[in-house]
Amino acid sequence: QVCLVESGGGLVQPGGSLTLSCAASGTILSINTMGWYRQAPGEQRELVAVIASGGSTNYADSVKGRFTISRDNAKNTAKNTVYLQMNSLRPEDAAVYYCNVLGYYSSGQSFISWGQGTQVTVSS
Image (tube, rainbow, N blue to C red; front, side, top):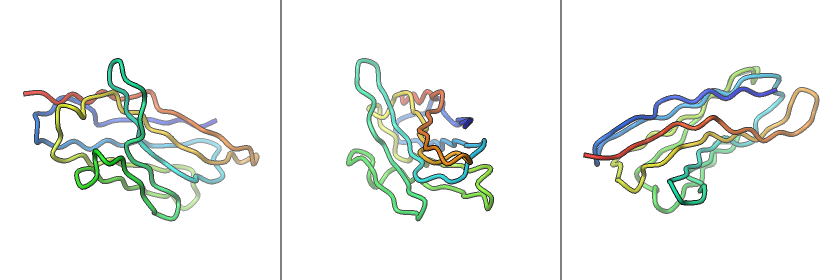
């Protein structure tokens, strides 16, 4: 079983910054990708950024140049953390942000796991 613990959401003024973090732990053999999605009221959940085990990244066009995703890889993969540094925040960035992890359990079975979500509000 995989446990994802998110933190870092909150209220920020336009132009401000926030850093989200998501720690994954459990009976994990390996993690392929870690990423962030967001969902605004009345909208579909969308990809914000993703980072692969090798460090390659992919961003939504709307956040390129403003957001940076990074990850810490524990040596024994017992705990891995992904971060989302968000700068120059805009009102349209306001949403619930969800952590997403794809990997393999120690048993060899693959998994997809979602965090509980953390609210980001951008308002003056």
